[in-house]
Length: 88
Image (cartoon, rainbow, N blue to C red; front, top):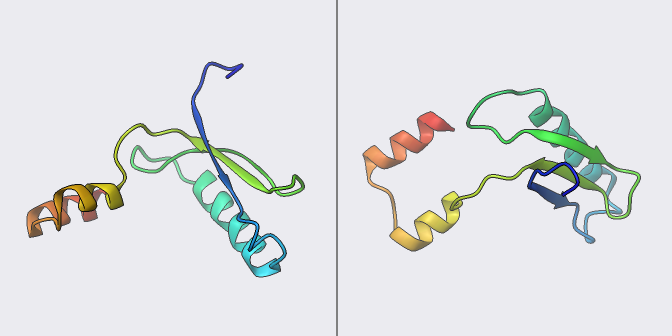
């Protein structure tokens, strides 16, 4: 990266690019995330809807996704689930 920063790029899928509703939701998601500033929320740096494909540039968070954690370790206990829910 020119700026020395790792980022994650979310691309609107090919199947949804022609769907005006999906495009609006993509922009709404970008605006909503960009308006928030919290340690548990990924920061949004840029969104470009005029590019093909449309994309969203976000902070890269190194780690395991919630989906991967459940797949790896199984269902969370009630206490673990409560801890995750509080963070969300």
